[in-house]
Each structure stands twice: as structure tokens, then as C-alpha cells.
Length: 187
Image 1 (cartoon, rainbow, N blue to C red):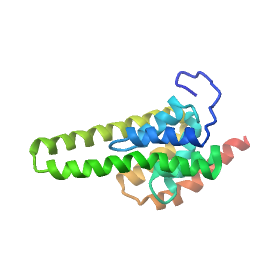
Image 2: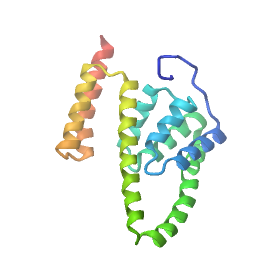
Image 3: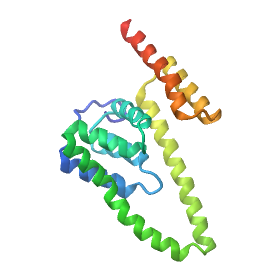
């Protein structure tokens, strides 16, 4: 669903649509693709609404490997099976691979210049801002109640501040979240 509560039917993509959509994510995602993935999947292509995206992103985070490629496999498989999963991953990785090779050559030639290193630092700050903005948007779309906010805060404090390893946080908060969600549905 779009922001503002306008309910629109989700769009069911085929393998080519998945390849092109994830290719755009890969092309636009300099400094990190996670913010662009949500924007393309939820806002532009309307394959999922915010709630579905947040749920699948949570699953992608607990799987081994990087979050966004996990996400594109899950979404690709959901809509177009194995061909959709493969098309999604190839779309996500093809453009960045070519760009990375070109950037590596450019970096090697320019890395000795002070102005170049200042630009790299600015790009890192912009990427951090995109991640924070995406977290805020996903939080709004999740429509959490007080209990959900408390669980999120507990995870943030445990992992972000106390440096608890993510697998331990999953083992600690996962069963609690499931029990609370089950209790809420039983009412």
C-alpha cells in the first residue's frame, strides 16, 4: 500500500519484471541497496505493501548472508518460483559487478588525492542517512502496538548498545515475539 492509506492491489511480477526491478535496485544502490530495495518493491513497483515487506525483511535478516540478496531470493521465489529467484539475484548483482570493477580501477588511480578521500567520507554519511530513513519508513508501515515497540526497543538496546550478537538476540527475542503475536491472535 502507498503511504497515506490508499489501498491498491499488489502487482504480481514475472521473472523479467523481477530482473528489471532488482536490476534498478542494484544500479541505484551505491552505498547500500536496502533503502532502494524497499523503495522499488513497495513504493514504485507495488509488489508488496509495507507490512509484507517488513515481515519478509525480518526473515531475510536472520538468514545467513547479506539481507538484500536474501530478500530478492525470497521475493523472486514468492512470485515466480526458482526462475524468479534466479532472475532477481542476477538482476541485483549484474550492474553492481560491472560498476564495481570500473570503480576499483578509478579508486586505484585517485585514492592518493585528499579531495577524493573527502568525497568518499561524504558518500558514507549519505548512505548512513538512507539506512536510517528506511528504518523510520519501515517502522511506520509496520503499525506496531506498544508490545511490538517494546520488543523492537529491546532488540535495539541488546544489539545496538550492549553489542549482543544478532544470533543471540534472535534466540532471545524470537520466541518472545512469536508468543506475544500468538497471544494477540488468540484474543
